[in-house]
Amino acid sequence: MATPRLHRLSWLLYDFANNSFSVMIVTFVYPVYFKGVVCAGLGNLGDLLWGLNGSLSLIVVAFLSPVLGAAADLSGKKKMLLVASALLCIFLTAQLAWVGLGMVFWGMAIFIAANIVYQTSQVFYNAFLPDLASPGETGRLSGYGWASAYLGGITVLLLAIPLLQNGSAEKARLVFLLTALFYLCFSLPAFFFLPSAGQPATGLHWRSFLSAGLRQVRSTLSRLEQYRQISRFLLAYFVYMEGVSTIVYYSSIYAQDTLGFTMGELVYLYLVLQTIGVVGAVGFGLLSDRIGPRSTLILILILW
Image (cartoon, rainbow, N blue to C red; front, top):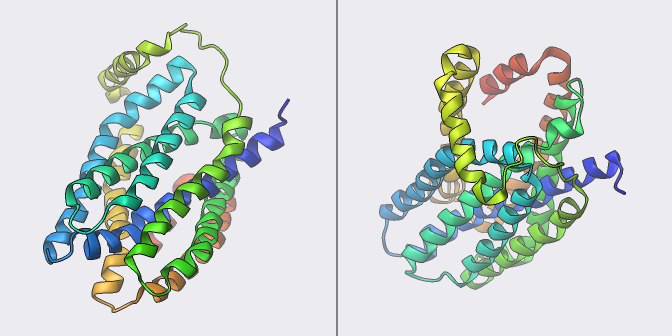
């Protein structure tokens, strides 16, 4: 039987694993590859299409996440949903390796689908936090999770250096396979050792969990006036995350096109950023338990 310590370790390793997708596909390699190879010859239209990739996928996620989150709670199937969404994201990430010159439709379609399932997998992953940490430990464990994610980003970047040094398109495609393999290997402990929820009190059958989740969201929205603080937080979260997402999605394209970074230089830039992230994640996680999540969040947004 898995121990609570093993539960936490496997949860942290999943963050270590899946940040490879965030770093290599969302932030660094695939944006540059998409504009430079998939959209070769399209000029600034490539920038527009890349922004469309992010916007379309995040709009879908904005509608799906509340429904899937409620459904996971009602059905008691959050581990099954985490495993399914992670495996689908891994599969789609590997499919990016055959997207080549001029394959704009497939380059967009596969990325959008992969990003949707990646973002929704985060819903199920985050839902494990209250099961693994007491209220007084939540900030600390969450910080360790972020630190683990940044360490995963550092590791996959180091592994990818031989493939990225000369900026070859063919080798960049191998990075997508490397990312999928990395994601899979380090997710396995979570697949096997994260605790499975018991049978939900509702007795909901898994085939109807989506419709039940939708009903739950409708019920919550009808009572939103009773939870004004939560409503304000969600609105603020939506606004500031749009700004953060814009920076994340365009950082590598901006660094290469405007600042003149080569692929090799971008690797070292992101290694530095991921290293800073490790320190910041642990520090702000500990600070959150000391001064509270609200004050910590405000400080982080000011720094951003």
